[in-house]
Image (cartoon, rainbow, N blue to C red; front, side, top):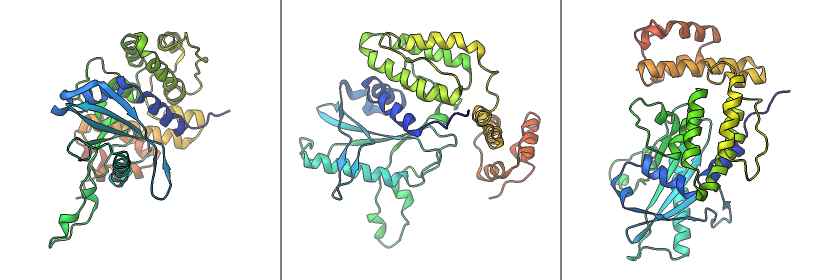
Length: 340
């Protein structure tokens, strides 16, 4: 009997549960927003606010996590849009503009303005954990056609902070923040080494052992059971955990069962293909594995090369996988000059 694909609802809800804890928001800001204003935040003031809005058309939106935090004497709003699409949303900037507009409308209705009568600043954040790298426009201004002669003055401009997990943790220049639970989450999400996974879990056990972190520990347990294990090791299940069985029990059970795991994941996506018994799954795994090898050896994949990878048949992919160790350039590997 085959296991159904991972539920995106489980994935989304698990992430929302994790980022409903102030420690996650604090580590997100201190570890991944490298800007001076973050140093002036009062993290003891972190306060979760409602993420539901009723627009003029009476359409509810309840998918967002919004926090506010003191910056000096004023409140600053941190808007987390948790994005889990398997493909890049080209018009994400339009969605961000809509969501921020709804937030501002709500703040106006509640008269939650700054002392000077202005709207408070908002930081829109997109967390993305898809396989391919994010390529969508970072600002809505990039999506609006420019018309000379004065009309360009009315073109909207609103950007968002993108955290592309795969790009972050696979960047050789990335320096992992110390004792940062969000960095640990990113590592677990994008890691294929079972021993490293255990090491990261061991760190989480140590970092989250304080009684006040009980809720966050349980949130990680839920994410591990519903998302991490079904994705990494189909067929492996953990027993239901009661109040006494938390993250350290999960770490212990995984350490014991890891001896029964298959050989290291040599092909990303292979576990899904094996589980479903589909040739398509194996082909996708080979394609993703080859793409990762190319990035590590030659750097970012140009569009002409990505097209070749997308169109290649399984036999061609295997040929490239065998040849990558000797090919000095990407052009030599794919045997085609780049198209401009």
